[in-house]
Length: 245
Ligand SMILES: O=C(O)CCC(=O)C(=O)O
Ligand SMILES: [Fe+2]
Image 1 (cartoon, protein in one colour):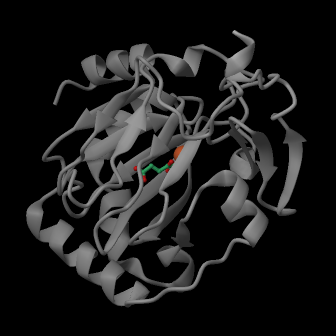
Image 2 (cartoon, rainbow, N blue to C red):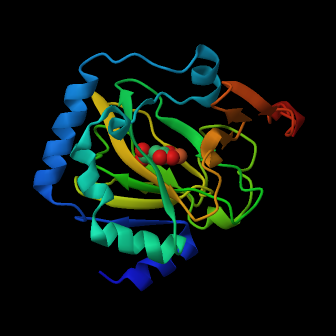
């Protein structure tokens, strides 16, 4: 593994994909733990307004907070720590391990930045682990705009529209995706029975612990701790009827 090269690629693109990073056996085990936890019909935690406006159907689970230690192996992986050192600098810290589960027929996640890019130096980094293949049949592909972590705030507009320069990722079992919190990204709708990813969120030293409390969508800024829309972005771009052109 060329840590320096990977860190350079991350700095340039705002994300990096490394296939076959984790062993098959470990992935199979964690996949089973997650499927067993969620069962067939998990309930949603978010309120209706969030689901409607954010077009985001995700049920989070924080296994380590419940004393489930199966996920610690990844947290302690020396190679993952070396990559995190190279990208985040000394004394970076782990925020939490979060499994994000979506049911069949749900809309995935709309375009967002995990935290506002108002200060370019304050950000989280997602360390995403995929315990089974994400395929076009299952849906739930992760979509990113390369280099957008340096473009400032996500443009207002259609929450699920396409960008010309977007790249669709189809992570396989054992893939690690490192993703800058300011990179514009989304998750496509889920067509298979369910879809999940496991995120070991981290941040550079000095980053506030609640950096991801406010998420930027193309139609709003949403604060999770208060379940409130703190900025309506739909008024910033006038909707001009087609007939006007
Ligand atoms: O599950 C994914 O592929 C991406 C999830 C995401 O948006 C995030 O972890 O911030
Ligand atoms: Fe995200």
